[in-house]
Amino acid sequence: MSRKRMIYEGKAKILYEGPEPNTLIQYFKDDATAFNAEKKAILDGKGVLNNRISEFMMTRLGSVGIPNHFIKRLNMREQLIKKVEIVPLEVIVRNVAAGTMSKRLGIAEGTQLPRAIVEFCLKNDELGDPLVSEEHIAAFNWAQPHEMDEIIAMALRVNDFMSGLFAGVGIKLIDFKLEFGRYFEDETQRIILADKISPDSCRLWDLETNEKLDKDRFRRDLGGVTEAYAEVARRLGIIKESAGGAEIVDIKSGGK
Ligand code: TYD
Image (cartoon, rainbow, N blue to C red):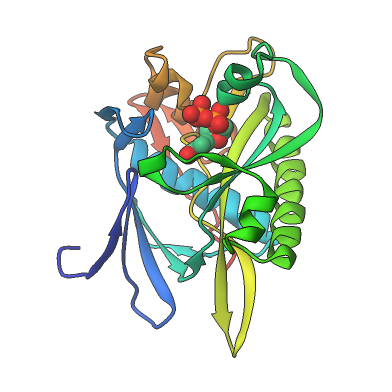
């Protein structure tokens, strides 16, 4: 690993140069951060679980026609991905009020929204990822209007698919964050889903008890963070329980 050239280090991942042109290796760290990295911890095994959960989601989304950057998982912590130019937006889809939406608008956490709501935040840590409108995005050229149409349509399709997938395993998809990128191939350019999908960037509540199975366990000091991520992986069939705790079983990687 040390001989690979590092391209970028983020809060929960590292990107290395890939083995072929137009590819990167995405490495999942155990680091957890919240509140714009003011709160930090290392959670043993989180990276391994997130690598598998993200592989599972991206593969499933690819199989229903949502183009994404995932190529294949390489090992416990790394996956091969397509290199993209990241659109500098955090695209958030919400089904139920929680987190900053509840705080900003005074809507009680847990309130079902009348329809899925898509929000955009500018990816800028120094500014604390501020909420921006499509007017800002167009005026400052962060993305073209036709790219925004594709991003919104894709985000809503991801929401429909993932809501159903999670409901099938007894989990309510409250909200989540996506990132998109521009993929250049044969002199054409298209928008594809990028980054990662894991309980770090989704709110997932048990359908019956409303128990939180996501990073809010870390943000709010509820404990059992890795255990909750393992529970999500177990329900999705990615890992099975064994006498010694959670054991990762092979899933077909697909999506190649
Ligand atoms: P939000 O409630 O806006 O913010 P916070 O996570 O600070 O409470 O988050 C909505 C969803 O999007 C939530 O599942 C977390 C995810 N998200 C990220 O993963 N990264 C981000 O930078 C932001 C703003 C949200």
